[in-house]
Length: 252
Image (cartoon, rainbow, N blue to C red):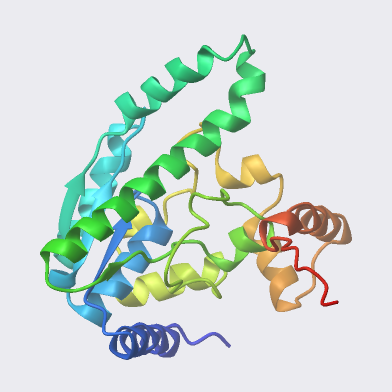
């Protein structure tokens, strides 16, 4: 049976050990107002102290409710919160891209959805470098993807797939929630229906499968065979996200 308290303590020690081994100082992460970033923020604060954690809200044609929920997390754990509005950056990029040709909204759709997390990750790494230069130690970027998202490839290459340490990489959604309850993530954030804040759809609506079923596949539990096949199809289609082919010349 999953022991959330024990797992939380192990993750906190994992973070501390990595920071000590590599002589690191702090963490910078985007706070979306969702459970995953809230749980990671809480874990980083417990491991490093809130004075060494900086959160950033990165609105990009976003809902005010997302920022309000993100602020709840910052208030709960006591870390500094910054805000970088990416809306004008996104709009400027779109204006330049429109000069390349005429495309339909549907043709733009996937590019637009993935541009936002890529802009956000560039911003988080920019601030990590800036804080490293001004705070007297190295700041790194924690990832906030969980095992269910990763299994079906529900992340953006060059966006939320980029990070320096991954505290919840091995936890399913239900395990993330259990650990989050131990950490003390506000209920409004922890039990909020997950969505990308971009498409207007919940994560499960976009994926066409339930997180509980993905967790069952990962953990080897019984699951409806139709749902299993849907999940495995997503997993296979995402294979290119996990392995980058690298050419190596043959030795003569």
